[in-house]
Structure formats: structure tokens, C-alpha cells
Length: 240
Image 1 (tube, rainbow, N blue to C red):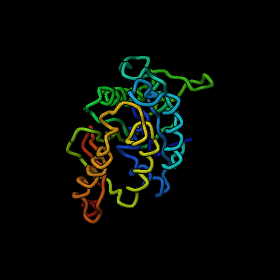
Image 2 (cartoon, rainbow, N blue to C red):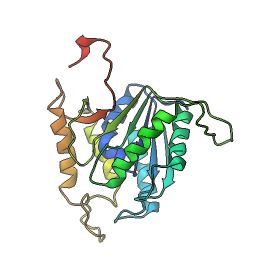
Image 3 (cartoon, helix red, strand yellow):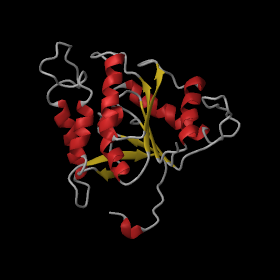
């Protein structure tokens, strides 16, 4: 399946929290969207890799995305090396998206910035014919570099280079995040309290969307993104 948008996320729930509204909006416009999670999030304080997998499946249905995979890299310890880059390159060549979206370039969790760097390097190398990767059937894949690489913004505030209006999708976005039941506030949970399981975390998450929403011409909620290169604008009268 050829995708329009391919999202890479260091952990299950990264994409939901940071660009879930954008993905649902793109799907509503007829775009094909997929997510590749780098790890199972197996070293998170709460839950297990099995519960994370179940929660990820539930969130996937809410988002309505077309495909989701997990590379099963080592949570907290994956490296930006040849082996991991080839795995990323193979997925880019498999789905041949127009746009790739990756983790925040810098964030509270070290996996996020490292995941961003991993995708950045792989994005470029995916277009080099002499970097060889093979599909699931062992067939040599054609080189392919997407048009654009963007980074979503996560816990730490980063000034966005552009924002996407998600006002129509903010409630469903929150539902997709809450699908990760073990990770967020549950008054009946006996697991340890973490940074993201405190009662006010989800409020701050939507608060960030409201903050970026102030940059919109008409909407109320937005998600922010950063870019690695200057964006070409074809019609200056359609830029708000």
C-alpha cells in the first residue's frame, strides 16, 4: 500500500498525543496514513508490552489509520546505527509516502530526540540507490526519498514552523490517547504514579493544542510541527 503520510514514533502513544488530530484530519480528506512505532514501550513504568499492544490496536481503530507496524527496537536503548537505519529505510521504501513525520527534535524523553535523528538520517539515505534494502520477500527495494520530513512537538515547548487546525478532531484525538489506559490517569490503578499519569497531564496536552490554536485564523485547537528545510509556497494568497 502506498501511503500519503508515514509517521514514525519512538513509543506507542507518541503519535496519538502529538499528531493524532492531524492524522485524522488527513484521513477525512482522503489521505492514506500509516504509523511505524519503533519500540513496544516495554520499559515504561506502567503497563507491559502486551497491554501496550492491545492499547495501540484500540487507538489505531479510533484514529482510522490504514496500517500500523512495530519495529520492536530496544526501548530506551536503540541506537542510530546502520542496522536501525536500514529498518527505517526499508519502511520508507515500502510505503513510499509523500510526507514523513517523526518525533520531536528534542524532548524530555531521550528516545524522542534520538528517534528524530534516526529518521532524519534514514530519510536522506532512503534516496540513495547504493544503500540496499530488501522487502519481506527478499526482493531488492527501489530507492525512494519522500518530498518532506516534518517533526511533531511533544512534551517540551518548541516554537512551531507551522500548525494544523484540529478543532474538529480534538475530542477523538483525546479518545485515542485515553485508549492507552495503563499510561494515563486512572483512579483505580495501583501502578506507580508517573509524569504522564497525573490527573492534570491530559489537560496540559489539550492546553498545548489550544495554545497553538491561537495561531489559527478561525479554529481553536492546533498541532504544531517543525521542518528541516524551507517550505515552498505555491500560492501566497492561501497562506494565513
